[in-house]
Image (tube, rainbow over all chains, first blue to last red; front, side, top):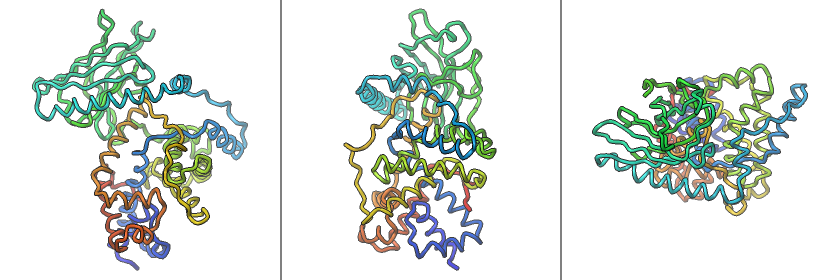
Length: 240
Length: 200
């Protein structure tokens, strides 16, 4: 039987699909008897499986979903469920004129560059730094900035172009601001308040060190313990 | 300001797979619908990157999700996340199809033939997190040496075996093995993957 050292090497190759044919059986034999190497091999597999996350996402044709579901429902012995309507934001996006997406992408890229350039100032250490905030397709006209002052551990978020859905206007919902850590965990940071001039503002207290992104979602009045509604704005803090 | 309580935990805000798993375990088609809606873009992106053929990529994605549907009862969460499982199945099937092509012809990614990327500013929370994860991955991959990155990309997307990569890069087989392991170890560390993700 091969050693754990050899198995470790081959497990890495297995995770990316490059293990040579002759090495497969010795590795499987070793893994069947070695729990430690199975665990390590699992971590390699999980790391490799994340590689496609770095690719720009593509969408399969809408017909694929229908084909798959017909096959699944047939195997389940059930009638095919009525096609589920795409979320409103997907329909909105699909309905945009051709080229609009690229315009939006370009805008996002510019915003991201501005955000990256601005946020990098945090480490320099400036009196304050500014991060650009972009609206999502749920609020395409929204934009704004987050001005963070490290010495005061305070961030001021200002957003314009953000609509006030009826539920928010009537107090039935709120825009809740979240800070995300690189692990993906979210921290409730503030609520956006509408100002008389139509802008939305929020003041966040506390250090923003360790956070990678800021975003706001529509939540029930009083806020939520975790993001549950549609995101309306977002900004990257990642280059800090 | 609301209390600064941490809501996400280690699993992040992508949300747990519990609901999908429950439905899949009960052989409810709605489970595969939820799974498809969450991971089909990732699965298709991976399949297309390997095959550079939209039709073949869709075939692979359909086969992979059908396989998940049929084998859902064998899934064990302690062996890795649903996403890892789905990606592994798609990857294996895509490589099988690639290797089955006559003459093992591989096509470089021709952008003019690529489906239109649908990246936009996201408006659902999962998509916000996807943006974050993509940035993390790009950063992590950029931390690898050029040789390490090329080695694992030839393997993962190109479907080349270690011996073939050794020939292509004109380096000893041991060097390919070492680079592959170092790259995976670095990625694992940079992504702070939990050691608990084992495999059978």
